Image 1: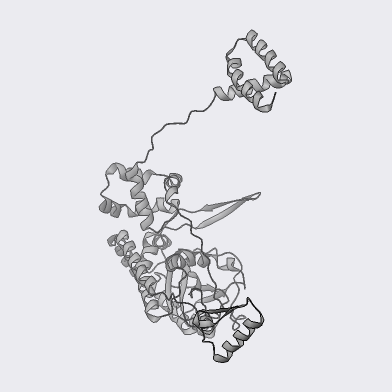
Image 2 (image 1 turned 180 degrees about the vertical axis):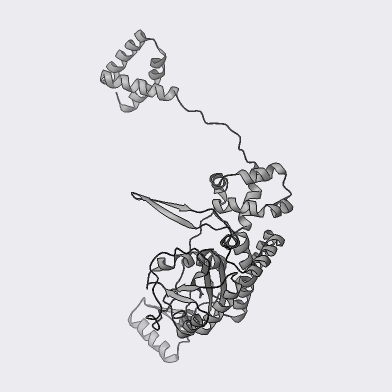
Length: 428
């Protein structure tokens, strides 16, 4: 018998074999072995296993979902307004935003209770269909600094600070696909202990402009700056910043060359607080830089530091090739400063009043409006090299060149030569 015939024959008898009595099973088994040529023990095992699988076939559960459409729609709206945080941060954010969620969506007590009870794992399941992954390339524009390296110590060990004020700083370029000329940069600074972040935009990467941006950001932090850790870029390794740190009693540090992990905290904030919002377009005008600073100084700083919880890595566990990361409880930077009890009292009181009076949904909407305006100020023209190349390619052909082309075309039949801006081709 062919294999197909054996399969058809097997399907016709195995259910009958499983339901038959002991005496009848022996007869069916004898017939099955004689027909297929199988060994008797193999045939018994095959008939018993297949019949058991068929009889014990699992019936899928038909349970209604605990969280209805209204709960998931409100959850998705909050997730979108908050800038798509992870499920653990979103879980912590729901309790903080609940007074404004009640006003905006007029939810009942039952829905509020379900929103506060939903687990991070369930959030991942229910929002899975709404998630999209966007991967883009970040272009680096850092030029190594050659001065003062022997004055600024290298920080190679892990930052294990227990007080605010120890920060990491970096620049993010807004050059688009053309790194020529003068364009905008974002100077980004984050506190390691509290995860507080401040950003300022500058036109060009001049030493004085970077120092002015750092000095302005230092006034926005609700605690004094004690240390600045940077990479080896010339915008940070210079006498202007070194003298500024000496006058303000700030300790400068630097990472090892070509070791981005030495500044892992600020590298992560470069994505969440700058690149994710501003994208990779080119901003090379004073108007664009001022529009970015208008957002950085006001709405974005309040939204990120007062309303968005963040998580800090506590430890890593490696078992073979698997690495398990353990994070602390999600908290906003303001909550972390408040728990440290080392913030400026007046600034902390003012920030708490702002947090209680500002609607985070309106704040998120204002951020989106300003981002739309900033996007319209991007320089989307071609780079100078491309424009120069096209201009050279479209240069009119002179009379002498045209005669030379015609001569070549007569000597080599079938030759196709472009005549530049005329748009025609001489073909023979």
